[in-house]
Image (cartoon, rainbow, N blue to C red):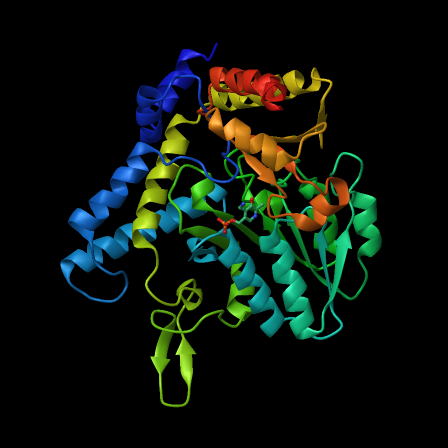
Length: 408
Ligand code: PMP
């Protein structure tokens, strides 16, 4: 049974008001790694912004615009504090993790890298981190090296270490892999790479909703994620980059807001972080995210975190008991389990599960190089959040056991 405090926590998510009322209780949203539902206070903030606070930021000097700009910057501070960054100047708003990955790769390629320099990523990267570096490497004559994984689909520290040499300039890795749910050993890796003066990038998209992030302790140079995977809205990402690096890097995009002085033939760029925020940002998205951060800070108790861990353990142990299920990785999981069903194509299984009211993801999860090497037909991924009910997991398991009934 789901504990009462989780049922109570779930009441903060308006999506479930409708789902729990209008659909049979035995339906399950288990696709939280793709996106989480938005919490009520964040949703209300979007409405409130457009209804009462709608003005552009950092442009006009009227009262409305000043109030909106002030709140916008306060949320940047709140985010910096939440991540334990050194300064709010290190927080750049983007439209998502993907744009953040592109931003940092383009900036580094333009300002820091030269042909022949080496970049290391891992086989378990999301396409946002994988394709970006693959293409930037081609465009700039960089050498891309791909770290292989161990049997549990973790980046092997020694394997990575062997790839590093004096030409290595950037290492870009995920914190938690989205296709498998496996947490990567980034702490020891970052410690080691720091000594070698290598620019380190961590894709935290699948970590932020499950792990408390302390950027000063991690000491990576860049950390990015999307807000929609942690109870906020779509269209907003956070790209943290150390201030000393932002000072040196050339901007990614050009336009209004990122400039201080423009003449016919030259432009002086704005101070940090605005130099990296060309054009009108997603103000409503930032306001929603501010509420989400407050919600997480106030409501995400140790009990709720512990529940999430127990729920994933329960799901994993139940899957392990089924002889027709092969789980891709069973250790160091955060929020998700990825598996295949013997004799089933993952897309067919997902289609039937969908008809039964189970929302999960099938396929290669935007991680084709990894999936090609471990499960070319893809996998099914069940991903949970703190609001997921035990009953949803049980319903999914019951549906899974019925799958064979659907074969004629
Ligand atoms: N990295 C990882 C690990 C992800 O899981 C995702 C989203 N699936 C992304 C990057 C890209 O996020 P977005 O599509 O929100 O830009």
